[in-house]
Length: 437
Image: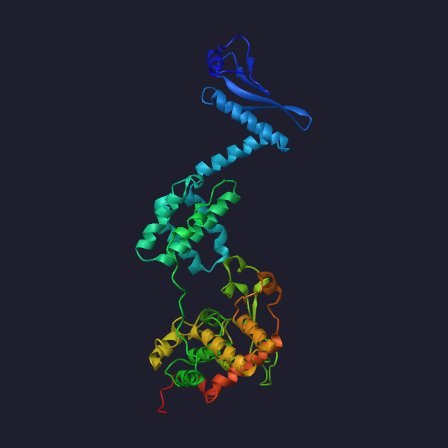
């Protein structure tokens, strides 16, 4: 076997020559100098040669280790030359592409699947908190210490939930880099338990007593607000969907209603596309996750009424005077606040109201029965939640399951909360003034 002394004393000759080590490894000495380690081996029945590196940058010991690595690859049926090229590519990509470069590339790929406001929040949060600390580092050189060094200051300023979101985003960047061929330990995964516990999720103020719910609906009906806002409030209460989905509802999404007559519409639905659903980010382009909302007779009344106001534009509930702009996200909330419900109920609270009231009602009507379990599952489906125990695959194919029972629950809820409400036609009038009870 060659020693370091042998390699060091190898001088150029008139013709290039080899100094053999073992296992096909040898030091090639060309006439012009510049010694290099080379490995001769057979793969696929053919003799091949792999240049390992130059001496003395690559020592005798390290050349032997690389030979042994190549032999192990051969025993596993892999070509050492291909493995070497793959490793060089990974090192090049890892060192030439920093965390910031990978993060921006990942963001651009994901951006079409996100709402614009979310896409902006993702990149601005990384620009503010991650890039100044780890942005210039190659992804394969970032460890847990560096990762925590970026997240701790976020925690210290009291933004614990933001720190957790940043960790999740960094985790996906490291996964993206790994997919691009750069091996890394994904330190964002390993620091999860080192962060402060995330605060409990926000609970939206919501009324859960039928008497108070009816009072809210009555005061909203009589409030000094635009007819579109009042109708949107009633539709939101009846469907218990997310306020943003209601504000952005389009006429093309409403099905099963004959607009030429006032006949009953027992099959009316609101078919919400996945782009408007608050689903997991990975599902935003999956057409299998559209959300179908059965419309009760009361909800159909609202839709028919508002069509007289906005039917010529694309949106059901648009800004007055602009058929292409959704109703302001604050319009319904401000209405509730002005009418004395601030801190007691918000637009998003209708979801809690519906779930609480209807689950309680089902428990009273069917105590301990299988029907109670099924109704709880159906109520979750109506709110576009993934019920406990239901897999994502089942949810994908079960999105219209129990439609008959959904319609019954929607109709039951509508009659409960609309008892004593003003006629829907009265909501079409201009801004109303509060009338004494």
